[in-house]
Each structure stands twice: as structure tokens, then as C-alpha cells.
Length: 302
Image (cartoon, rainbow, N blue to C red; front, top):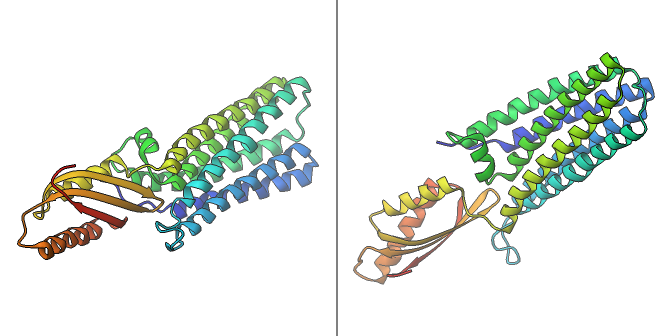
């Protein structure tokens, strides 16, 4: 069974790791006077901005419903998650590919390679701590699901984006460390350029995968298949319900909207039918805490 993941914890861990890496790169840039290291520091600061956007989305998602937004602001979280995916694609991926191609055409000798390698190793440690915290929350959310199945089916866009960012950042740092190490051993600047391009391609692939998943949530996905199955099993097991004719769900950020059409068990009068429907809805919201809106239609056919 799955549990409830703490997305906020994963975001704050990623924010802390990226800020620590930013400070390390900034110090290295000041010591060496390296423009490339300063650019890397700015890149890490931009990553901090990505976590800030996710925190903004989580805050907006908590706004209460109104006449203008009757189903609340929950899907604002999907918008900001999509923005982060686009930034990861453009600012991270495309820029790294451009920088790598530039290094191929105009190779420059590495400056202070040992310091650069030290900063990267520090970054790997910091990102590993963040990734470990993120995986704890992912494992709590996915239960007995495989990791790829969770990635495709989860409705928690903020945790999905943090997972993708942390994975890309950790692998990217490892690529960079290997590339710099190979350049130091051989003296061939080609390894540094190819490493930069590989990091860019990695970021583009991760960003596109994240964008595809978040796009589906923006369009309007229902709950996860296993959650839908749990809802159907609950309704089918209620004595007030003879048959579930149709079930429509819509994921609204952390909340869920449910619309049910069902053939109800015979009742003495309309008042008893209304009370039976209210009983089912109360029990459903008690068992499924994320169900915030429910619409129930008694009928004899779909």
C-alpha cells in the first residue's frame, strides 16, 4: 500500500543542497577569478529559484475555493511544475549543450582543476543527501509500485519534479567529475567539452519526460489507477449501492473531485434515498481524505 509523501520536505532538502552548492561554486569563482565557475554558481542559484517556484505553487494550491474558482487553486501546482520543467530544459539543458559545443570549437585549458573537482565532489555529497531524502518520500508514496510505474502514474507533480531534478543534478555532477578527471589525466580538452554536452542532453531528456507527465495533469487527469480501483471497491461494498454505473474523478493538486452515477438499493421514499446518498458520501470522505468534492447521481442506467 502507498502512504502520504511529504513533498515539502523533499523540496526543502533540494533547496538546501542547491544553495550549498551555489555558495561553494561562488567561493571557488572568487578565489580563481573563473568566469566559467561564476556561470556555474549562477546556474545553481537558478536551481534554487526552481524550488522557490514549487513552493509558490504549493502555497497557491492551498487557496480556498471561490465563485470564480469553484474547485479551488489546486492545479496551480501543475502550472508551476510545468514552468520548472521548461526552465530545466532551456536554462539547464540547451545552455549546457551550447556551452559544450562552444568548448569544442574554442577549447580552453582548465583553470584550477583540483579546486573545480573538489567543488564537484562537494556537490555530489550534497545532492546525494537531497536525493536520499527525496527517495524516502518517493518510496513512501509509491508503496509496492515500481519506480517507473510511479513516475508515469503519480499525481504529485512537485515530488515528480524534485525527483527528476535531483536525479539529473546528481548524474550531471558525476558526468562533470569524470570529464574533468579525464581531462586532467590526458590533457585533452575534448573530454571536458563532451562531458558538458552529455550533461545538457541528460537535462533535456529529463525535462522533456517531466513536461510530458505534468502536461497530462494540466489537461486534467483523474486519480491514479490504483486509487480509482479503491474508490470503486469502496462504493461496490456499500449496502446502499446496488451498482456503480459510472465513476469520474479529477485530480486537483492535493485534492480530488469525484462524480458518481449509481443504482441505489430500494428505499421507502425520496428522503430515505437522499439520506442513503449522504451516508455514502460521508463515509467516502472519511476513508478517502483527499476527496474534497463529490457529486452523486442516482440512476438506473448510465
